[in-house]
Image 1 (cartoon, rainbow, N blue to C red):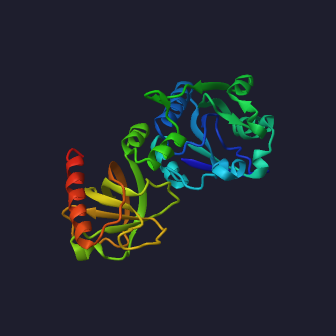
Image 2: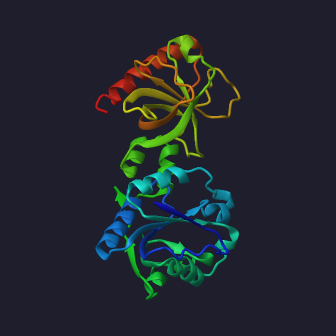
Image 3: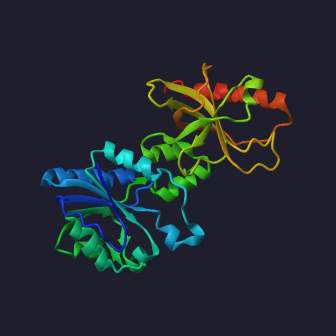
Length: 313
């Protein structure tokens, strides 16, 4: 997949590009609604003999447009998103730097310089996509342009609610992990590296892998979860129980959240290994215990519950 980074003012014309169909959006999470947009792009591109393209933005537009609600953490950080798009067979990924200068551009300029001049012949976007200064451009204004065809993809719902990145983030915060995974069409995942921790787990019979996220992930809310873990360059998937939180039994004022995974029937040292943690089920909220004995008893119950939940994984 060819990655094309675009900064305003545009100074790197891509004359070697071929005509393409482009799916446009931020696509954080690449949930089932996003997949519908991209799959529609692939269908149109293959039908018309065009290159398959995705046009996305970095950072999230809220960093410029909504300082009180800006998103600086992601369900799928940019590098992960690019890996996934490459795996879907995308030929070109345009990454537009979403700056104050870019946000101030008139919608007609965006269409002329970012779409037409990059040889986009088919535009595919969600029904509510907007662009240009004050968001004045929308699907209808795109359809009015005869330099390319525009396809609007209808919203995808789960129950009565639209599947959206905002809903996914809210669900993670409320421990609704099963709803998150249903909307994604896969388990929520975080990539990271195993680093040295406080090593308390091994002293109470539950050694853990302390996973430091590699990117700025939007993490699940503090609590205990049934998870699986994959070590890079290994085929086996390991089952375990994970605590996301601040370890209140041992710390009164800790604010830094850690990810600690206890793997079943596993006794290797894996410090420095790159791993992926897959979240499957929520078990309970993080809590403070009166002491080691009470904590150890609860971890044993959590382990049994996780093993039960993961039996068919």
